[in-house]
Image 1: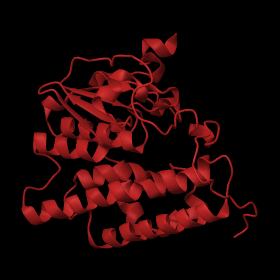
Image 2: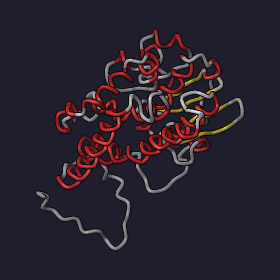
Image 3: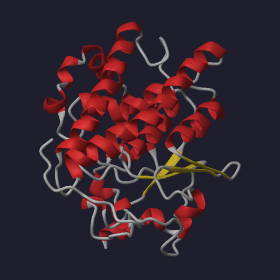
Image 4: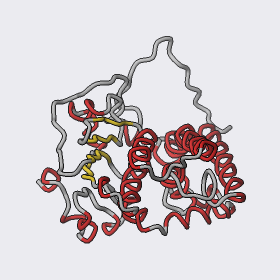
Amino acid sequence: MSDTNQYQPPSVWTWDAENGGEWASINRPVAGPTHEAPLPRGKHPLQIYSIGTPNGQKVTIMAEELLAAGENGAEYDAHLIRIGEGDQFSSGFVDINPNSKIPALLDTENGSRVFESGAILLYLAEKFGRFLPKEAAARTEVMNWLFWLQGSAPYLGGGFGHFYAYAPEKFEYPINRFTMEVKRQLDVLDREFAEHRYLGGDEYSIADIATWPWYGNLVLGEAYDAGEFLQVESYKNLRRWAKEIFERPAVQRGRIVNRTRGELSEQLHERHDASDFNLRTQDKLTPESTA
């Protein structure tokens, strides 16, 4: 270990609002709203409030998959929540998700609020009877992998991704610690895909929809610029799966919804109609963002 400056924790922790790197301005040790602001409401049954991070991509991909499967009741409005500007701390957003994290879903048909990406996927799968096996053993296997993802992804994003790509300083210990864990996770997936086409068996499911935005993007070189560092080319079975999922038309659409980074052609800041995918992102900016 090469770190020479040893941090000595104080007897009582106090918040340093300036310490935290790129996301320091929105991280805080208390919950609740910081300002009063209602959420916009569109015309469709499902209202999604999100941004196109991996967790956000899960839900918009799911919505697009449902529409592709013929579920017209899954029509949705996707409203952009600018987490860098603190939109997730508005009173309207906190009413839907008291944890102030994207994504959040409002089902206007029954007034249900749904928060946490895995819960949203399960809610939609059960509502429409799609992408979740009905047979008990197959359903259990899919749920195994859905919960595996929900527990594992924080080590990739908040752990590896933060210390490797976003932290204001790079330190050997946390990078090594989380790199080891992420590579172990990649090996878990690679071994699974040596035996099965999809997570949970031979049918595409919410486990794949949940996992692809994190680990699919990673092994396809779309996350943290860490492909060479992690030697992602060595995970052949995982990459086969990642490429197959990427080629699905619904994934191609869902992955760009609420996205604000990367090529303009891969950004659709808001989605309120299927025709929006035919328009340039600058034509779909919300009024506030063009002011």
